[in-house]
Image (cartoon, rainbow, N blue to C red; front, side, top):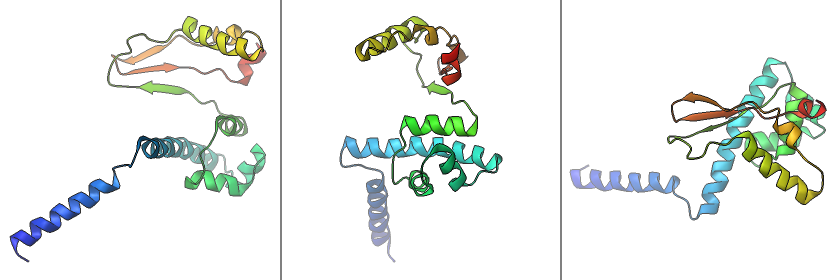
Length: 162
């Protein structure tokens, strides 16, 4: 193989590689991002289920769905919704935390009043009352590393009872 042919093959290989990671439109990119996010989440679910000795069909039974549906989620054929996440949380006896990470500091860090305002507006529009009591149970944001991460506790169904 001569040098010219080798360079051509490398260029073709590079183009093929780049095509794998390029998307036709933003919708395709968002779908991939959603599947990656779900895979990260489900890997933690699987680890917890394994630690508890729960098989997938047992976990499916616990959350009132089929083992086939869970398999479709774990294979990335379907996207998981937050109702299923809440059911998994309850079935596994765990609590999920949400972490927002970024390179830059937040210009306006989220605080309890901001969360309360948004939730009150949402609940008023749904005529289900105020959510302020639950918001007051939120912990104060913890700044873990200068400008890179903020962590907020998310109330669980146990928080609603207090």
